[in-house]
Image (tube, rainbow, N blue to C red):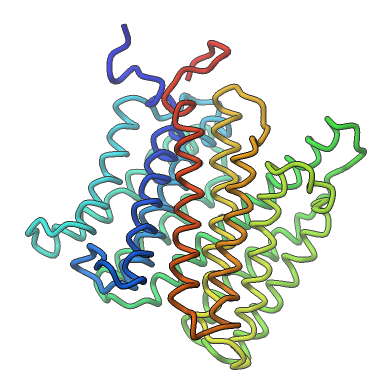
Length: 387
């Protein structure tokens, strides 16, 4: 008989963090949709409704998915044992503690609330740093830097309550997506195409990969010092171009028959679309709030949904095949993004309908994930290997 700590659920980081992230996503977007429809008030006692929504989608949902991905990946990168059992439970507790204090007024002094919210990222970084440094896996030290930046943005935001810190945190997350996407999208695509008898090859793009990351850093600096200027237009437009040139070697059109591939390609394409739209803010054609959801709902939504489905299947010993209902959720995410980004631009008088419809579609995507994948997250591998 397995004890609580020995359950498969606590065997790898993706299991609890993907479950918690998906569950919190349904909770927070469901509340946001009902709030926007005029029925309820979000529980963010510390923040106004918009800041609560933005903060919790970054530091609640997205950080949970990042944690699950990195804790699982670092074991593969270093060949070491993954964080599991008590170690993993402790990390989950710290993430949950942050969500608790950001949603419920526990009567804590402000410094206690801040401490409870920010402690998770350093704990996660330390959990990654030990195996990375021990194996001297220099290639992935960059993730420690990016986590440090996310920590700093959260701390500054809680002290100042300024939205700019959240914009910078978003750019850090997009940098992670660009970095990881540049590695895995072409690799996964070529491997799958070859299995199906299609001749395909990866094109080395080291200089372009570096340029993509540098361009995103430049966009982040423009958000701070040159928002709504020609410099923003040039930097964001150049970043969109660089990412587009990168993507031309990803065999995107050959992936349309495989949802597990095209959902990642879609997420990367939304990054390009979002950066292009961001460049238009520099010319005064669009406003920043009207384009930010191309990068959040479109890019982050598509990329994280695709990755959690893929990682769950692959790391529980199952075939990387999307069921019909999983494919439906991928399509729903695209509709949610289109509604949220282009709906208000085309029919601003229907803003409430666009926002609530998009929020509920997003939530439905993760309800599907929970229904289909929770048994895989909580159960043993069918091949009998260690969870």
